[in-house]
Length: 300
Image (tube, rainbow, N blue to C red):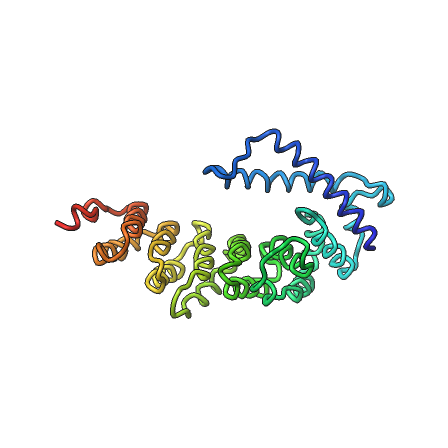
């Protein structure tokens, strides 16, 4: 079966590379400008499009079956995981979506196998070097491919994502960002546990800010007082009040205006001007008045 995994991997990589080469010619790429996020989103959507296109093309070495037909015809989860593991180590970019979807269809059984492969100790203390540690490659791929799939693995996956963020060193910020992105994708099911976790913290450190960032991504119709109170309490437990104000501004509840105004008045001259103006910007973003808080007016 690994020989067939190699066929899939080489075919997929070649198709992606050719597709990317053509795609790059159609857009201007400059990751140093303010549009870099939009360009990354364009690449993500193009990757999805290419993956769906590839999975419908027959491959002679697979007896003329399309990749999707071949993968859908496998009804052994361990074989699917073995193919996934091989491709996640060998592929230059990603794992085919049809393979991810097939594994996801096995529900908690598959989720438990994937979670068991995540060595958080290895992830938390390693500096990622491509191909130097195959176990790491698999862990990295699992986080990117599966942990953000809504509902997949339920609380097991959410707890593992929290563990990754809470244990990674700050040097491994990339891994915390990917874990936070996965939480953001399923924040509607994850936020009660995140609130519980954050509320128990005596102090908010840099790594916990990734959890707060994920909470702020919740859809407008799901926002509620419990989330607001969590963000408000976190503001006072963090040393980075500037970022705490940004989170409150992102969340968009105007109830935060009086608290932020009082904090600004009490801390003019006690915090940096960057921090002070960031808090004023959050107040204004929430619909509050800041004219009397501008340094010249506030010091009269």
